[in-house]
Image (cartoon, rainbow, N blue to C red; front, top):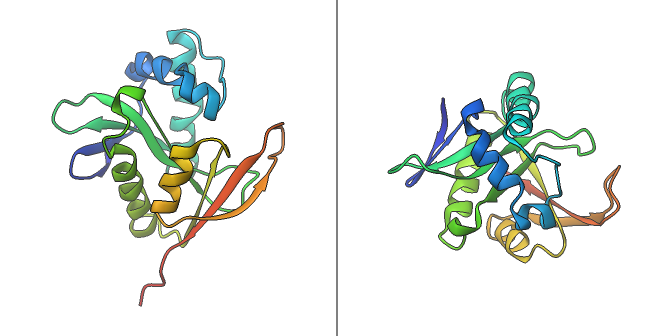
Amino acid sequence: MHIISSNRLILRLFNTSDAAFVLELLNDPGWIKNIGDRGIRNLDQARDWILTKPLESQSRCGFSFYVVVLKDTQTAIGICGLIKREMLQNVDIGYAFLPQYGGQGYAIEAARATMQHARQDLGLSQLAAITSPGNVKSNSLLKKLGFTLEEVLVLPGEERETNLYAYRFPVQE
């Protein structure tokens, strides 16, 4: 099911047939370094992750992370979407892309479309975002999107520092 569309991309709900893509993305060295090792090592674990993470969030909250696919080929290239973490006050935006699709503007395009969805369809007035301090590309992207670094903190259950960003949508009249 398509949730969001942009010029080149479609953001759609996950389904269990995305397991091979999830396995590849969650085991990419960039994901492990910047987001963390989720321990997903086979297709069954990837299918379980799909069911218990994005699909459960969609059912519970009405939003989740979505599979980002190229409009012209329907190729899955990454994920982007929204999540409500217990440890954060606001819903946060997140994204991750397979390395071969980096540097082509897909992340900012998907993030902008997700922000528009958050404002127009979900009625959110602000968003959060978290990144590793050393994730230069992600920190730069958030600043381009208009996010402001609020603080550097250690999240509950974590050992490393995390950058916490905030974005407030302009007041609509």
